Amino acid sequence: MSRKTNNVLDASFGSLAELNVTPLLDLAFVLLIIFMMTAPFLAESADLTIPTSKASRDAIDPSQVHVISVNRDRQMFLGEEEMTPAVLRAALMRLHAKDPQSALVIRADRQLLVEDLVAVMDLAKEVNITKVGVITKPEE
View 1 (spheres, rainbow, N blue to C red):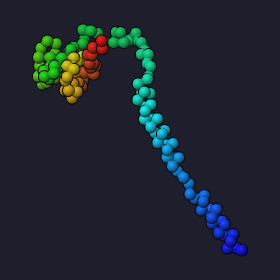
View 2: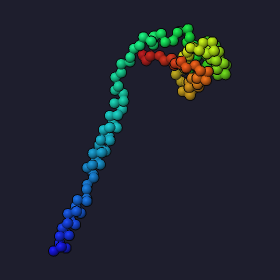
View 3: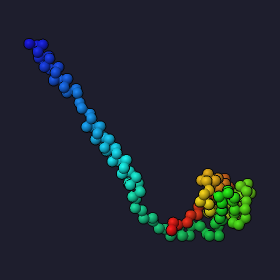
């Protein structure tokens, strides 16, 4: 009798050990696909209202702003004068020595490589000019 009881117990435990995970995997893949499809829409849906500030209007004196232009051929101009990177670095050092609050605005050609734009920004950082901006034009 004890043998029959053990067989019945063994059979009942054996059926519980077999769990079908196929529906669970189907659900996981469907959820993954849904999240992958909706993620780009969530990232672009941020509706922002940019804050205003009275301090930002008078933050930089326009007479302290100097324009560096860089064309697609990597020619650099400080104002209207064409300069090599070494000459530009020396000119930026003189500007910073004359006025430590001076600021730079970089006008870069649209087809200029990003690393060339970053090189100009690095020149400004080397001479301790911390107020650097990039000119863009609004889309039409």
